[in-house]
Length: 84
Image 1 (cartoon, rainbow, N blue to C red):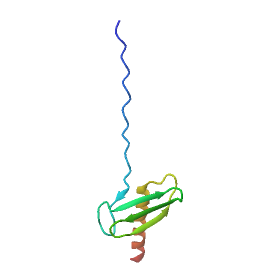
Image 2: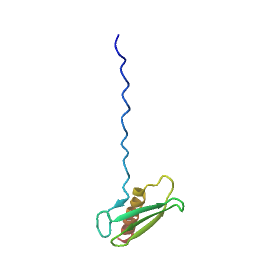
Image 3: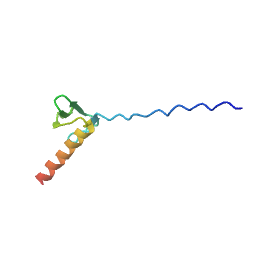
Image 4: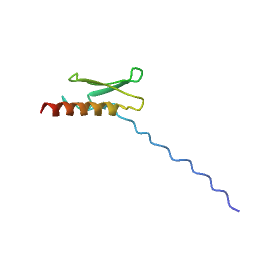
């Protein structure tokens, strides 16, 4: 009679962190844009530390910093397309 095989422990999960600093589309500095989410006031703010550009938008419980940054980029593209 052989010994029972022991059960292998489950593999550990890798949790990917969502970045909160990004590149500025106006001054082209790397990692100079910070994103802050105020969940109580439901406001997301993106601001550049170098050129002091800011953008605010409404957020919900599922919003991540990358979502606020993407909305800012989309808004910049929309304004640029209106001007031309």
